Length: 212
Length: 103
View (tube, helix red, strand yellow):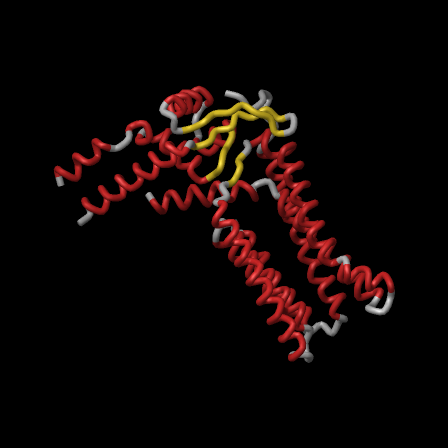
């Protein structure tokens, strides 16, 4: 019974990824980051634009996440819910708070460790390697193991490989990060596009609206 | 063994029916889900699902609400606190039975 319950739970969680919309917009957010890091490298630390880009990083990041959530909700309301139904995922209030506190602590720890590693290792671009490894772990644990979406194992491996290869590419750090996010973004957008296309062809809008 | 078997008769029959058990299991995983989602996930016909949902609503195990998300009309189903409690109790009883009979 427990095993079956876990399977049902995974299936219900996988539903979120069935239309490819999350990947499509996640890919778009990665492309924004690619542009951001490339622009930062291009304009340099000394220019006004370069400084502005550095200062606005948190705003760009939070803004992208906020905009992405709004867009996902908007698209799912128009594309997914009329076709295959609406589901609101359960969020345990107490767990959410602890989860967020833990995430912030882990993020702070990782950021500090990254700074130390980046300063100590200068024969490779360790920042892109760390980014690749982090993105890989997040994709593997969050989407791969806990939800069971197979294609995220591929994304995770790709992130690890890209991070490693780019770390010895000899490119400037900003361009390395830009290339990493750019390639990951394109992969997500292409994958999301394919999934969305298949989803739309398999699930035409029902003639009748959703009522029993 | 006979004592263990007898404990099965205490199981909540409202939940024990396979289709309703599936509906409740799905609803226990989420905050709420609409009619279309439940229909697809449970693989039931509209009439069948509607009948089971009515029974569960009458038993106070689920709450059905007709609402809108944007312009999209939705029939949202949600497990009530007593429904969640009853399902948890059902699971424990069943688990206990399985443990005792496999000894």
